[in-house]
Length: 361
Image (tube, rainbow, N blue to C red; front, top):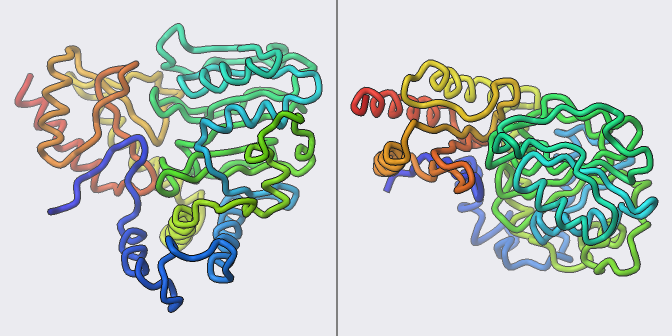
């Protein structure tokens, strides 16, 4: 069976060359006589894998030396608790900007641990834009400000960071990780679940400024204590070895195929433009996000009827364009066009959309 074009928001499509390499090495990784899925996380072979993954991550993101790179478990959702437990430890206050379901869930979880304020929200228009904020919106004594950089469900992204001054900025970048350059020095913490743009599900990468470590609350579970994880070089317990290995292969692919995140961004911009240009010209399909806040990674769109949406999704699936159904809170369709989605996939989707529009006008 031929491979489909997979527009899933996560777990999402992976580069075919990465899948082929993993397949070739699945029985015998580099002459070790074993699969990465079988080997000890304490072995020299795996130690090389995790160190290479960290080195590549540092190189591509140009991570400053005073930041730790951690390979963790629990999904991005576990960090919703870990972040206040580790960092809401001064005034006991934190400010959150609510730009979608994941930011809202993080905000709700943090409320269990202190004085948490929603300083801005775009819920009034179904999270179809990024709310503008001013420096005075944030409390002077807030321990940190939290944002979700790219909103998978709603297709919005921050083009400019909020004006937080010298306050610690924490960002969930799960659905835009490694899609473009990011100045890590502007953040106290950047973290991402890997299953959208980096690797299969099961891995979280956290990039944390070292001076923020070591102040976790006494009640913090040991597995959520970032200092414990940093001191153990992400090997406090058995890490998700296979997922870290795939992460390394994806990082290799970015470096070999594109050379830098600047080139990765240019590729993603070219790809997204094909779809957005069609949506802007179509009489049947329309995007749901204000143009200035459009994501390069997640593109939600609709027709003017639920029946037509359902027909499009059914016929698209039959034609090999899968996982285009939008999230239930938005409806319609959503094409997630992460790094690994080839330009050809977007071009063929647009061809199919044009044909569908002609046949159903």
